[in-house]
Length: 447
Image (tube, rainbow, N blue to C red; front, side, top):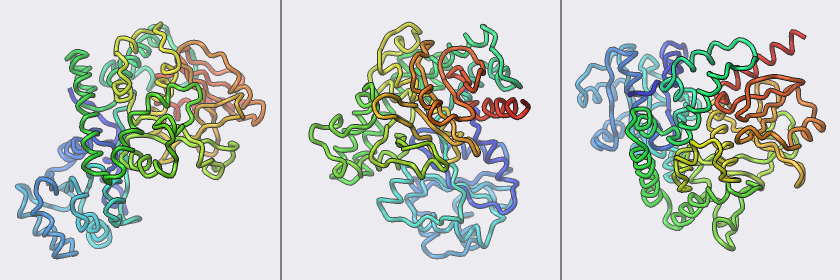
């Protein structure tokens, strides 16, 4: 089974756009960057010419001797079996972090030879750029981020009928029980596999939980090897310690990142570089607290107060040694970590919708906390996350009394409804947040 990725539709629009720039595709390891590039090439071009700077180190000489796109193309043609024809050939520069000159050449392709379609990607590209002080041709490339498989993409592959039903929603109304139950079932299965494509395929191809667990563990082991290969020696044990502290950080009732949870006596100045390494690698999300929900939210960011989540709920579950059977049991009681998993999956769903800016969170002393606050167009929207059907708590109410938002959102396993400014939404629909908010907005404008 292959999982259709939404980013390919974005690339199809890019293919035919005017003023097109070369694409620089970023994303955590094992999210499927190479597969996306090759699939897009096969589906949308007559020819696909792939150049891998890790497997073919001799390619580097092509870019070291010339900055002329025409000359580069003539020489690259000697290394591939297909013709390089403008408009008909997709050129893929894979593992581009191994050749800084190739990365810089994207600028000249944009300026002097925009007729060529080029997509570049690399393993831990953000880390490599910082570590080697590489120059990225800012403004001359279009940066796209590939996230792990979202639940929307997962549902489209696992239960297309339910996916179509959600896609066709034109108003906020209660879902039929059969639809809601199917969403809950698939959502819990998604929390088992997470969004790493190989793990998703293992689950949906019914290879068994043992195969899913083995796949996730292989990815975690690969990440550990990356620490040793790509990080500065002094940071390796610190990166390892932060990564393995994630389950403990998220199991706290107050999920604010605490350095002493990483190691007794740990200080921020000693671990900040390690934390940034994991961010640059795309392995975790850092969500900052805001002093107040003003516009723009980034102006109210408190840099010393933040929460950290894993890039993928399946990897987080495996990292925490949480059995799949516990996750799929709706009445299983695994206390605070159940709430943490719920937050992580919702964040994983809404991150691709946030146009490059992750959500924030809001606290009021020690009395209230709203898990996420995000900008949707010109609106600041508070988002509360509950693990199951228990929606008690006064945090969202306190926020509402203080700031009077046009709309507030609560994710839980309850049915879909809108009442008095509160959009109660099943957590599986988090990936449709922009659509659902748009429906609410239309309803408010019509009043």
